[in-house]
Amino acid sequence: MPHLVIEYSQKLEESLSISALVSNGQQAMSDTGLFSPSAIKTRALPYRDFVLGKNHDGSSNLFIHAEVRILEGRTAQQKEDLSAAIFNYLCEAAPEVPEISVEVRDMEKACYAKRIPF
Image (cartoon, rainbow, N blue to C red):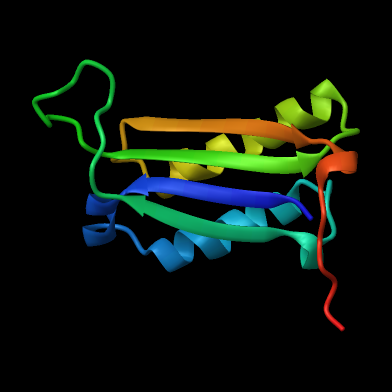
């Protein structure tokens, strides 16, 4: 059920293995012990056009933002630990990226629907 969506500046494809970023992000989620490894879904989305803050001159055009979506019910400490684990992983995996952020979002169980394979 948990989703890890890694958004990144497309230019990173020149210097990073995005497939490794996804695979290792999946492992970082699993290593927290909060989720069944088979339930974690990880994907990456490149962005070609974006502006980072007031930096319009393009001098820093590298970023990674991870959004972690989980069903409600985790404690604040669990969410903080999860955020820190993903953040630390991304910082280690991409030391040349100056803009790295992580956001953990709760999804309401009543509003989440999922199709199970037949």
